[in-house]
Length: 227
Ligand SMILES: Nc1ncnc2c1ncn2[C@@H]1O[C@H](COP(=O)(O)OP(=O)(O)OP(=O)(O)O)[C@@H](O)[C@H]1O
Ligand SMILES: [Mg+2]
Image (cartoon, rainbow, N blue to C red; front, side, top):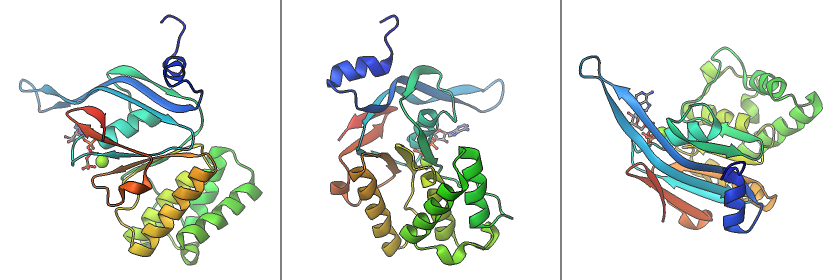
């Protein structure tokens, strides 16, 4: 396998070059307790995962099964103990706990993240306008995060992951705080991305509408198992 990456191997296995994200043999344990009772508790044990262009994949598992841990490893926010991740393209990540600034407004967040992504001002403003329209929170554009409801905070969190129009979107419990109308708007948005050849990985502790996904993986006993 020398000189052959996981992406190469997976492309050969699947017979297509459309793998946009792949992980192989991911192990992760967290240290718990204090000395002398300190021990490593395994969370992920040999996770294999791959995602193709234009796929909508669900990752389901009970609380504490390691879904967020796996997603952090996939985006590169957390290092695995073993295994490797190959990213073919730009990722957008929507963390379970929003990483926002209480004193900044929604508009200021989009401006800040636009700079961080290195996108032109005009492109950022157009993208921002379409995100406000798609998720229905334009009227909070000039409200500070400290004044937003939980659901609107979740919309901003998702909107920031969408801003640079990433080819792969990784969403950790994106619709947990959404009302029904927003939940439907969310799925319209996912369907549009799928048609455009974008890929979306969605974490949830429950899946109400299985038919909205191309594939569902269950995270169980530290492994991702196809349903
Ligand atoms: N930084 C950490 N230090 C120690 N243990 C951790 C840490 N982060 C997570 N854990 C533990 O690892 C396990 C998996 O956590 P993780 O957050 O990945 O689960 P999850 O499937 O996303 O759960 P939920 O559905 O509640 O979001 C849990 O037992 C959790 O307590
Ligand atoms: Mg989680």
